[in-house]
Length: 405
Image (cartoon, rainbow, N blue to C red):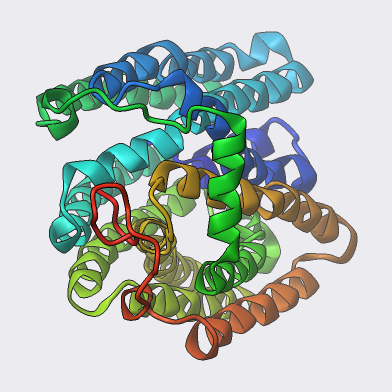
């Protein structure tokens, strides 16, 4: 109901935010959900208690900011546009920090719950169901905004999202966690020297470096994402209403969910490189639609294709991150990858927003198409399917180093 690239972007725009501030949405969401991951490695050291700790963390440092955003939007007219803009972006920043602190631990926990042969399907099914529900939420938000765009309406959307989040996170308490019944095991390397040693082993792997390059190019090519909603609300994009854009954005959520289901199944059977390659191709198509067309049909088509793109950047992305691990500590490998991606995820949308302010959306979209095409070709000709590589380093348990779980 409160997707940042549509709801928050439009809310900030309604309070007079420029393209640079709106562009910072992706920078904050991407960067602040990865930079604090190093902290999470040492906050959640016990694998046996990890599930309970992760649930409690949501209640303390993630869900409250839905309500804070709602109150800021609700009382925006009393606070003034300037104060409201900075309150909104600050609360969003804090929610991203809360999410980032547990992101790598959460993903590693999910990887440990399912075996490799079922992980893609399990993640695909769960994220598909979540995305279908998310699409429904976006449709509801869009219909609400069609009837009213007053600040209290945005506040109601955020508060409702917060209440739903409470129910959602409690559902995870019913998941069986194998680690809760296993002998205690540290969730992070015991010293910085050990951690840096694992980082070096990860970077020494050629295919992991190839994966990094391909994903970095794709992330740079998608730096325009938070500006797309504002583009379609402008005369250049068809001057569409906020309600229509948010409703059309539900297409992204729906297709994202459907694609995660398909990509997960394909990944389990044929490897996850195929899906990330497909996602890079869909990114090129998405950007060409935004660049060359306008109006309601263009908006709907763009968000539908975007869902096919972002799905590959999530379930497939993390499965490839799991499977390119060449040593015995997957959590360190995931954290390194996330930290390296943050060096692009943070500045790229900020640079994109500034570029759009100065030169307009057309030239920025042209550059993004070129970067996305480069990512697509890189995955075709350079990166190899990780399952085709026999990593030489065994884990302490004697399992394949590509999947120490």
